[in-house]
Structures are given as structure tokens and as C-alpha cells.
Length: 297
Image (cartoon, rainbow, N blue to C red):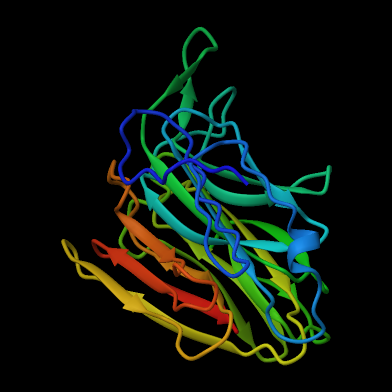
């Protein structure tokens, strides 16, 4: 399998970077848009616990082209990081919201989007704001009882999983337009309450129209789920270890809070994978943001 060296900084105004970590006894990283792996044969299926994971990222300002990150047939992909400016974009005409999302397609593939927003000009043209957005995704090798939902923020709760579901729900995407993520209390979350799982998103502008994607999935018998939170004061950046012990682990986001208004690739909430298949994951939170996460082991 051929890969290119990992880029450590964004050298161009607009590019696509895919850090695809295929963990089969080690880590392989690449920064190419067409990186693919045959995970079905190498990882296989397991009746117990987590067998492996992949990790991907994309960050651009003006390129809405998604990156294909694998088949839906043997994995479930969730949002594990978002950074940059989600508060510039539009749903109108040929406009484009700012996006950090991992989505399923009719072709049974996962696609990852991380890009800034645009609005429609007076002549009907698309005008980009050049706001950077970085998205990262973790893919778990399980598909049981998987269900995706898409939710328009209005402060209300909506049921995304019922009484017969015993798995875990995650955020899968955040989509913002002008002002949608401009308040420190703006947030999106999935959470259990009673016998159900809910999604809730609240934004403190008059017409935020922030869309939230979610995914719920069952993990193999014997999988342990741990949860936690992390936060940083304005102007601070903090990194926290969020897993421990032996065994393969993987993590995704369940709650994000904060103002995503800075044109910065590093201003946000990013879950970081380990450098070995059974290493520990960390989360980096910056500049007034807060997050909750769930990790499978």
C-alpha cells in the first residue's frame, strides 16, 4: 500500500487532506484524496468487541467536493472533530453552507466534507467566503442497527433512537450559515434520556438554520463504552487523554459547544487517534469550546 508523507501544516489556501489510518498492527497515514483500503479482508468481522478503526480528515475553504472514505457495508463513520469557521454560508440559491460532516450515500459509500461557505451573487454566481473548515471522522467496524438522522436546529428535542436500541449515538455532521455558530453557547448534542436517545441543537441568532446529522449504532457484544467531556477557556488550548488500558479503542463526538467564527484550522474540537492500533486517544479543545465524547473498547 502506497502512501505519501503526512502534511503537518496547511501550505495552500484550498486543499484536501485525508489522514486515513488503517490500523492492522500499525498505523498508515496519507495525504491523498483517493486513498482506499480493502478493510473487509484485512480486518474481517468479529463477534466480540472492537476489531479496528479508520480515521480521516478533510479541510478546505472553497472546495465542496467530498472525499470517499469507504464502504458502508462493514463500518459506521462518525464525526470526531471540527475546527474553523462554521458561521459563514447560505442555503439560498447556489450558496453553500459551511460543513463538517460524514454522510452516507445512495451508492452505499461514506463521504467526508470539510469546507467553508458561499452565498449567491447578484448575477446568480457562487461567491465563496474563504472561511476554513476542518472535519475529521472515525469509522468503527460495526453496522448493527445503524440509523442516520438529519435535524434542523430549533431548540427542541427530537427522538433518534427508541426503547429497543441499546447502542451508542454520535454526531455525524454540523452545517452552518451566516451567524449560525457565532455565540459561545451555540451547541449540538445527542444524549440518552429515559428509554430514548435524542438530538438537540440550539443557536442564538434569529434564523440560524444550522443542520445537525446524527448516527446511532450497536457495537459487538463485549464492547465497553466510556464517555467524558473536555473544555478550554477563551484563548486556551487543552489536550486530554480520553482512553486507557489495553485493547483496541475508538472515539467520536456526542456534544459540541462554542462559537466557531475564527478563520483558523486549529480553533475547534478535535479527537486525535493514537499512533498504534491499541494506543490511547486524546482530544484537543481550544478557545472557549467544549465537547463530550464516547469511546468504544
